[in-house]
Image (cartoon, rainbow, N blue to C red; front, side):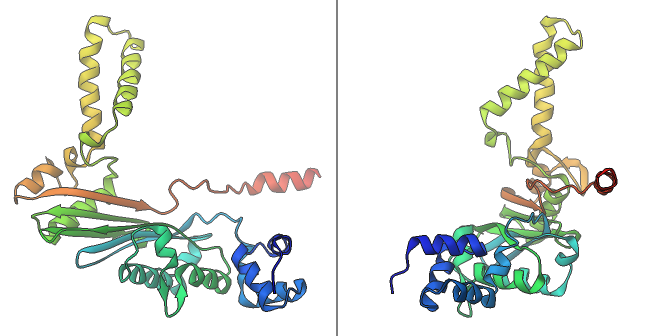
Length: 291
């Protein structure tokens, strides 16, 4: 039977489930709205959807490699407690291994990858229902390397931070050492060539105004700004940073000693960029008392 768009809309509003799930539910139940609601509840889709507006800012990151392919990704939950349970840990491993064994190159493609006939996005919905918290695969970067390159993978604090590096003409040990550095120091760029000119111009302007406000004579300000700018650029670029395991040399120099160089890096930290909900219980209690 033909399913009316208006009925799909009503079912979505009732359950919060996705459009395609609502359409399928109506098709399976002959267009009966109440039965369609029950269908979605039984499948766990409606229950999971009700959690959709919650903030999932905890969770774990992970990085896996296999041959010339690697994936670095983040699975979010609502609480740190859930992120530590065995179900969650098994899920994040399953997701990474499934992505790595597929041809996916983007997060969108990864969500559609199937494991035993179920897409990753549906596996996450089912897990949301079982675990009782909103779960989200927020980020996944699939990376490939050349045969003369090595991956360095490092997971810090049980998944709070994960880092991945690609090193040319270097060992896996050296690549992992640089991944540890990336996790600890959090460089913003690989080298100065990657920095947008607007970023440099903005920083130069800020430093110039800072120097003028310090009362420095105008004729020496530009020279001061050049020095401070170069120092700042070195601080945010991986290759110029003092190597965390030997601060006497830069990351670039550490790698050059073995004839290798860093090609690329990625770093994920749980919850970065998510606006977390702050719970001010003292204010909440006070407002209830005043009420």
